[in-house]
Length: 125
Image: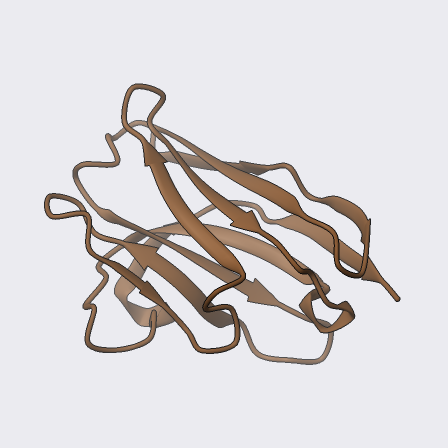
């Protein structure tokens, strides 16, 4: 059974940091790209970053570039999202997903087919 489990969410003050983890089972992260997405209340789910299998190519959307870093631990079959300089507008449920990551475009929901359950991130002002 394919599973993706996010962890590491929580409450943090503006300017603080959190690291989200996405642990996968039932497949290896080398089989697919892993993407990070978020959904704030009343808003559509948006792509943030993705990392390709193989060449390790990475994509960030402009709103998180320079603040968020995606990385991979192949031994643990886990992908991380280090989030620094957090802002109240980063408050959302964060999801990881397995699929495909064309690096000439922002991460796109319809290219991902396995999803985690989500982790809440709340940034207070």
